[in-house]
Image (tube, rainbow, N blue to C red; front, side):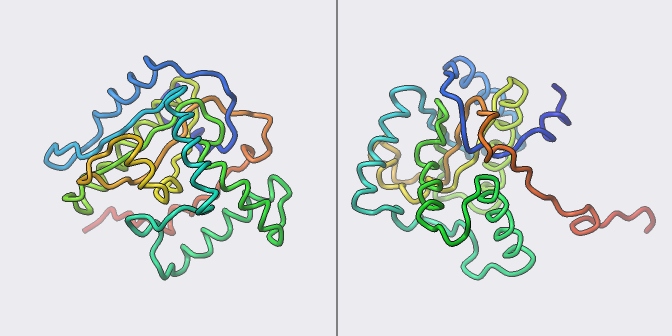
Length: 224
């Protein structure tokens, strides 16, 4: 699979098969992904890989905590801007409606929608989960570097026949994650990522998100 094919076939998978992903494969992906561009070569990313029983234990702890706080706690950063303007607000609304439509869950059925959303905290059934953190001293430029590293991981996973789902939803469980993984206080918990083999029979995995036309976000000039 070439890079173009990996990009074209990458999508957020929300239903995985239980087939295991080896520790060797995860290690290989994380190592090669670290060739990501990094301003000043700071390499500001930190990742905690959870496979098998280690992954199951985090899921168990969150499930137990959800009895007290079903939707978690306030994250340590704004996942979305507090006042999301257009066209971003419409894009976010539309992709949510498209996703739930694949499963036939109407907007009025909030309980079923929330139940599905809670699957984030089980890595949507993926056998491997990644938790990403970044040093609190880092600024916007270094958050960009972390995103590039994550992008590499997702493309390398595709090269190996795997799929992923980046999940900022894990940010609401930062206290449990910090306690379980002994994450130092200087590291902010950014997000998680599910890694595994897609369940191709799951309706939700038929979702192909829309992308804006080139002229909406790019200006190409050929003359001075």
